[in-house]
Image 1 (cartoon, rainbow, N blue to C red):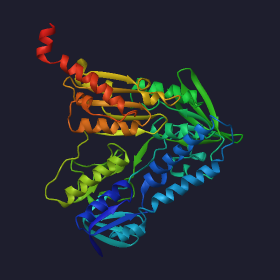
Image 2 (cartoon, one colour; image 1 turned 60 degrees about the horizontal axis):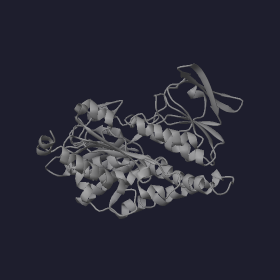
Image 3 (tube, rainbow, N blue to C red; image 1 turned 120 degrees about the horizontal axis):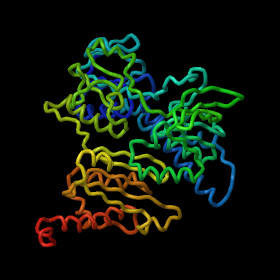
Image 4 (tube, rainbow, N blue to C red; image 1 turned 135 degrees about the vertical axis):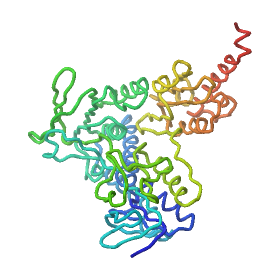
Length: 461
């Protein structure tokens, strides 16, 4: 029987973070995964999708000046080359060089502190479940009779199809739809909710949707898929809409309907680990119902982002190793959808803020068109929507525009540190930059802060 301090099931973002954190504390670490290290993010998520998006944006810009045929076979080859390049920094050889052992194969629990992998039994003082998630494929009639794409096999395609149906208007569906459309693929995006990106601010999403449609993307919202089938070499999808049944078709169909935590085939019951369809049950310290066993990332539910898996991994590893435990804090969470322009969010939307705080909130909107950097780029547009408490502290922010994913980080710092947003009025920002938009809003907030002072309100009255 092999004995280690820390055993980790899953070598994705969360698992790698746990491994390196534990090694930093001098612990012996064994990583276990059915596949090579990197997880969904490296092989089928963040890395390949952004590689595809970058190429699509370059080609879209070039086609403004000259019309040409896009070789999507070459595009997909480049995407896979980027994947391999990223993998070189987290390969099995790199892990071993850094003192982390790697065992490739399926793991299952024998007891709360023991695992079995390919007939070998492993005993660990602490075990981390970092198995991630898989694409959700709902039981739509006929889905078991056709070949479908998900993000797991999408990037394995030799070349992109001439036309495609994308089922699911979340971040993955919208990002890939715009990228493929810019590469010359005829794309139809289908979303069951009333808007694409349902969790995002309605006003901001409406601006993004208009831009996507102007580029040629065909979007169907409030449309529920009820049947899928093949006919005359095409994939056909029946949609139930407010006006009746509609049929759309494409060469292929991509399912981008969300994620399902990977909890099956682990024999969690043998270790006394509770779980639901939403994932492994954990307490605020990221520990499961079995003492000494932790869960991190998509498999633990909550926010299914690589950066959240990283944050959870650090917290869980520290709690497992150090005598003082700290709770995982989800108060300050941000994310970005990498469309063009980008759509980034931190904290609450205006709707969520009003539900929680009523009409006492302060809402600021500022168009990108009013900043000089945006004026230097033809077609650059967007807006910032900032939601504050009455005292000027940040409740949430949504940014649609160039560099939104970077700019939201400044808002995230202000929010996390509990700083009054008006203080940004005195922070000198480089000119001309997109981040200057926050400085301009900060000046407005500062003035309003002054008007909200009791003595000023009394004088005004």
